[in-house]
Image (cartoon, rainbow, N blue to C red; front, side, top):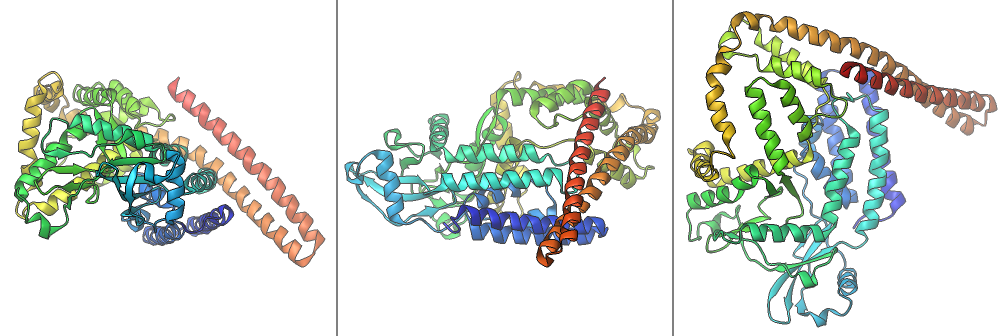
Length: 541
């Protein structure tokens, strides 16, 4: 793996971030247009992508995870990293052999007849080799990359520094991007992938889940040979869903194949339990007899019974206009950050649900929509990783299904019969909210009169006025911080100039400016946090 030096890795990443940081501030202070900002974020994405491919390792995995957070990051940046491929050159066989023998406590010959020394797949965290056990069984051996733990510790340390800089210094809306939450989510996901014991448990879970489903094939796992750094599985041959030539030779038709894919993945998205979060063409294959082969369970998501219950409660609460309970459900689901004001959220939901399409004909819909968007962006909302993974799973599978169906077929028509069949098997209790929704439609349509709707702009203006007052005070504190930070940078520049010219007066003045402005910056930050805490308590009071 390239750039194994810890200091060099950290220096390259931090220097990239420093350049990006300066560019963002320059654009902020020079008041660039929206188009110029979009171009900047595209350039930042290109530089970020280039650095990731140069350094490889954990950074590519982080790039992949960031690429699915379009809810948090600028679209120009996302476009540049959304197709990152986690493929890196394989390690030297001697390094891999050393890991295998250490984990198994002896030579390879005690378990295997042969092991191919050339990797069949290689990614940032693990590599896969093909082997033959002494009983003649072909297996896939997934091995953790050499030195990956040390590299990850370095990259996490670097990422922690970057998060601190972004959270304290970069002029981005703090209520829109909670960097600490984002860092915590990234760390949890990657640490899980590092422990192959967790992937083995997931593989066994899917094995049990589909044990009576003939159209699905999940590889067997050899637990006695698997450790936290090694996962040994049954070798399963399969055809990629993108291989047009081989797909045409299958025993099943394209339509049947699509139906089978939906039957396999629809329950994963709708029922409590674990779902495959990365079903791309290399992880979902089809056997020659038409069975769906599921591989690589390193990236997964989970829909808990509590999540399913809260989703049902959310739908029922919105339909019955119980917005206080709806906000509580959103909180339990993790969509609202700790600083979110429940009362503001309740009012916002009420306004959103007041819209009646038939009554909007005389209204300036675009102006109203822009106002609502401004309010939404001011609220501390962030999509939890598990739900982002759910969207990723659905979108990835949707893309594969669209490539298989005929051009004149509608995806909804393909999904409908499978969904109705699944719904019929669930019973009325589990999906009572469907009945509730049908029953509540007449009430929902008549409860808000046209007179009440005309009050909507005034209600929105009242909410916006309160938010603008808080934003004004927030801006004052932020301006103090920016000015003090500029002085700090100026002082640091002066220190450098003083050292370079050996001018003691410049050096002493610059040190004084740098120290005093830095102290002022941290005092202003403390006052801002104290004020925000006070406002949070006041809004709850």
